[in-house]
Length: 224
Image 1 (cartoon, rainbow, N blue to C red):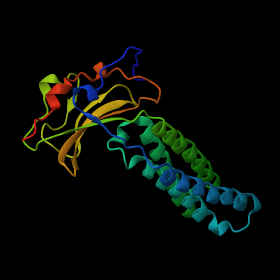
Image 2 (cartoon, rainbow, N blue to C red; image 1 turned 180 degrees about the vertical axis):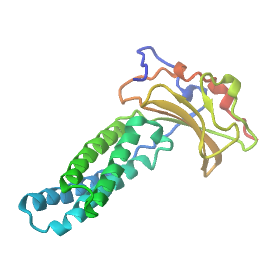
Image 3 (spheres, rainbow, N blue to C red; image 1 turned 30 degrees about the vertical axis):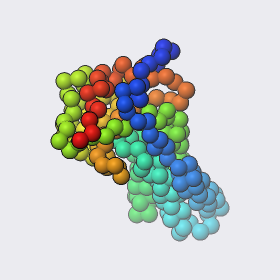
Image 4 (tube, rainbow, N blue to C red; image 1 turned 90 degrees about the vertical axis):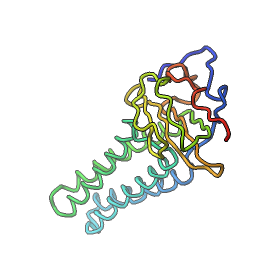
């Protein structure tokens, strides 16, 4: 778990960064996920009644696909989120379940394996979504210049991927298998910007920003 403190910490906002909200839309996530339960229920009915078995592969696979659609809706707003093991596992087991249904369709797996993998995928993707929605959403943004470079000399313990501006991860610092901070570039209506995203801190917990090992004033670019 990320270390939290009760003391009042100095957040990036005190150094000129702007806090932004990138929470996923609950409707776009929960709607396909809930609809995914319907074909899963029909899969069980078909299996236990032995009626319409020719449809079971479509029902099972369709259930997993809808779960994946819901999961993608949750991660699409948060760049670099797959650096979290818990998030990655949710999608891994969903893809594994989809593969299982392909094997069932080719008579390489028993139907029971497909059903079991779908239930496992649902549990894992639910845990993933719960983890994402309970995140504290500690995302900060500041203006940037194409000529600017990351101040690596004031970034303690960071894995530097690129000092130059890029819309991929420029630097990453991991706290544990599920929590990390990373810096990446983005384009806004006002121009270039970089974002500092701390993922894996639960809502209600106070993050100790000193753990970042950053001199946040070094990232502020003066208007040209």
